[in-house]
Structure formats: structure tokens, C-alpha cells
Length: 277
Image (cartoon, rainbow, N blue to C red):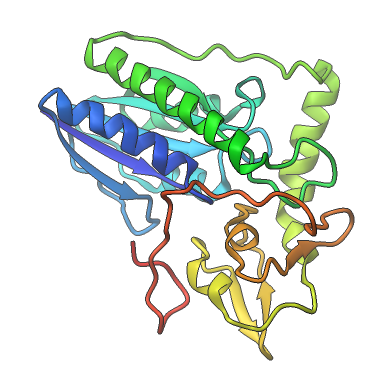
């Protein structure tokens, strides 16, 4: 038995969930291959199971994940797939699962399992609550998330077929939900990179550019400058040693909790501005 695992992560939640699932798969005697998504990957080797794990951004999957899924070649034989989504609130996963399934159906994939795993919020620059939790609260959420991931993995190993049921977030009316989804996805997200700023505590260390998963940051005149490929993954904000990064128009980060999954340590080539996990 062989299982291929693919993920995208900003501050480690999706990787943590997929690693946890991988442990369960391995315990069952399954050989696993875990890798971060790459737009260069066009052909995924057929396996007994293919599992994707992505976070929720703007009530959907990150744009890079959508582009990745659309870019892979269709499988010659029908491929069994599981889709797992990490979210700060399991009731606010939006269209994330639906977006994945819509693309995967075109790739000759049979999505046999889909589910949501609640993990700590990392949107430190949010103009309004909820904000990232304290370390103590985050640890409790992670513990529950790991338990849920193990349960899901055991279900999959046992042959359970399950689909996540779409629901509107409790704090939204149907009209408000659709308005914010379309407005944020097509008007807000593509331009939010322009809001990134740094406090005067920024020393130009360049770590943000080196660990950015989409190569969206360039150091110019000893200060970071963001570009339109930014996914708002918050890795730069939550890993900045000086806690210097914020966003204008309500995205102040002083005195706010920062969040990154404790075991997540993105590796990078010190001579390049991209990660080489």
C-alpha cells in the first residue's frame, strides 16, 4: 500500500495535520510520501490513496492550491483522494472542500473522504476578532486537532467513506456570506499585499523573504516589499524575529498573540529567497 500526501501551509497547521495522518497510515503498514505542493509538479505518481491538506483563506483554498490542482495532469486510472482542510473555526470552512472536489473531479479523481480539522487561527493582522490565541490556548486547540486528524486517518484506513457537509458560518446570513466571499476573494485578497508595512523595529534581516512559501517578498533598501503573489498566509508576520510586520487599515500587530505551530520550522537556503524543505 502506498499513500501520497500533499500540503500547503503558512504557519504549520496543515503540515501538522498531514504528518499526524501519515503516522497513522504508517502504523497500518502503508508506505507514505509527504511533500509540499509545487507548481512544477504536473504528474503525481498513482497511489492507493492521495491526500491533500490545505488551509482556508477567504472561505476557499489558497489561490496557489487552486492553481496547483488545476495544473496537475489527469490520472489515467481513477485515483482515490481524501481532502482535509484546516480552519480556525470548523464552521467557517466555506467553499474550500467544494473548490477542491470541483477541480479533482476533472482529474479522474474519486474523493472518498473530506473533512475539516480545527486548528489555531494565525491571521494576526485581522482588523477584528477572532485573533490568534495565547500559547496555552493554541496548545489545547492543537491537541484536539491532532486527535481529530488521527480519528480521520483511522476512518480512512478502515475504509470509511465520508463527505463534509457544506454549511454557512453561524455569524453570517446567506447573503452576507456570499457578499464577503466574492468581495474578499476577487477584490480584497488580490490587493491586500499592498497593505503590508513594517514598524521601525525592522532591521532588514530578510528572514521574511527567505521563508515566504510563494517567493512574494523582496528586500529593497533593507526593507521587505511584498508582491501580488502573496497569499496572506501570515508566515512572515508570525516568524518575524522583531515582530515588525503589520498591515495598514486595521492590521496592527503590536501586543497581539503571534501563532505558528510549535514543531514547524521552515528551512531555507541562506543564499536564496525561497524555502527548500
